[in-house]
Length: 185
Image 1 (cartoon, rainbow, N blue to C red):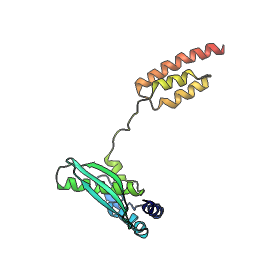
Image 2 (cartoon, rainbow, N blue to C red):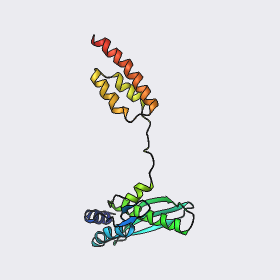
Image 3 (spheres, rainbow, N blue to C red):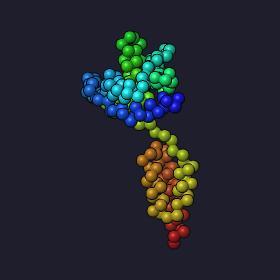
Image 4 (cartoon, one colour):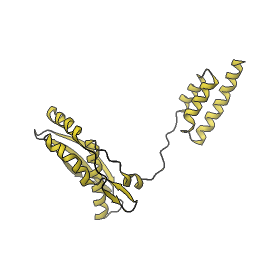
């Protein structure tokens, strides 16, 4: 794999950003389509004895694409598979999912940057809230040696906390505040 990796590193240094030259009329946004991504990577790959293929794998609810980097020595590197569900279970739905999967798989495999306004707009979901580790926060608050330090800890976690976690942080903070005030007097 030494030859492939050496060529891959050289090619990646030469790969340019993909042009956002397509428009999604539904979301009124610009994005780099599959052709633009291929245009961004192909010259660097060819110059370094590399190519890529994209294999489709069986999938009932959408498309699974695997991008494989090939070297002229015969060495190859699989970059894993990407699954994209098809919104419609017809030729148009699967075709759209295939184009999307091929584009994102290739961008990911070769590190091609191109912010994708159509993808961002298509997935307008609420940010994922991760549950805070309240035991760690409690321990951090207990270890506070001053009111200022306690305020900083509370402030750090407040915007990340759910309402329930905020209630816990507030109650714990008030309890520790009382202890710090007693200690300081």
